[in-house]
Amino acid sequence: MEDNWYSLTTEDVLEKLNVDKFGLTNKTVKNNQEKYGLNVLPKKKRDNDKNYLLNGNQEIISIVV
Image (cartoon, rainbow, N blue to C red; front, side, top):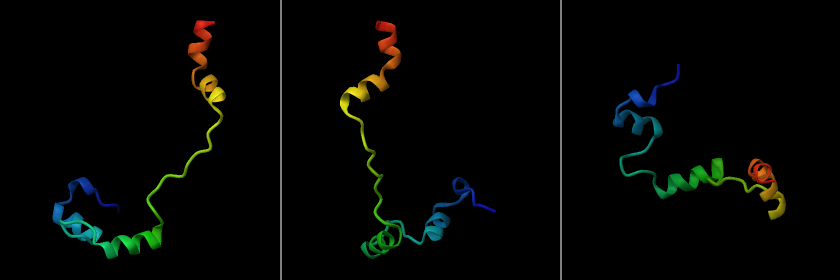
């Protein structure tokens, strides 16, 4: 059964996450980055500005026309 994190005490959460009240150590951060990768979102390829404006504002353009 999954824990309901909102119902845990602060001490229980810290223990489950294996951290203390001061957060992660530099060593833990480095280990986590090696294990899970950097905490970044992939960049989306963006259409050129003309297509972006047309696709994003089709409803407004329809009303204006």
